[in-house]
Image 1 (spheres, rainbow, N blue to C red):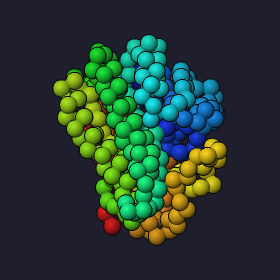
Image 2 (cartoon, rainbow, N blue to C red):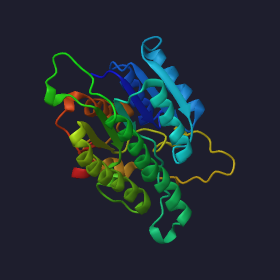
Image 3 (cartoon, one colour):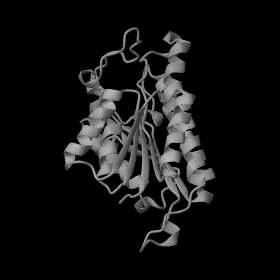
Image 4 (cartoon, one colour):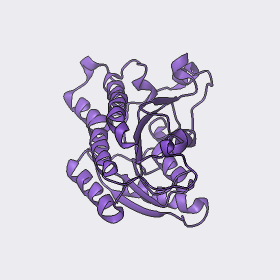
Length: 278
């Protein structure tokens, strides 16, 4: 389904970004750029890609760093441009959970931390991705109608909580709503260039964000934004009454990235077991 160069942020560990990385690697991609703040997490993802079917057939470039740092992001995209000269797909997956407090009990530092990663950094990623994609030629492919060909495709990872609210999550919910708004507007501006921009809104997925047992240890002095939560009630709101898997989200991302979704533009696809309809 895919070919060319892909970039995935938040690709380390055992969450959605790692699953998307594996899905891209098995879907025909030839060059894969992975980034995450956690070097060990990136190595874990690369190992999982290689163990899936022997050494991966795609070339993998992994660069660890903090996407909330614009200097790191400039370095990352300079590497993509200089090494590959193009970017066919981008998945902006890096994000953090909320502080689980209402607005009047939250601090400005909470707002800045969550928003800097979930929205500001994602916006900067989109900016840099669009700059590269707009400057490149549309790849030639046999048997594909001209109207279905694309210069590039971006998928932003938002959340079901960008669609609906819940108690004690105003900063997080707002950051994900912002991602959905950005997706719509970037899609409008990118359409003349045959670039598609869409979002995926995962529900409660079995990842380190929902299972503390999967999370890496905090660095010394690092503030834990995720207070313990009982997700049983939230899981049971969804008609399917279970957590989703990262792979179920990854399959939707691969489809939206590909030219099989050639008439999907500016959409926010909810992958939540029915949470938002109930």
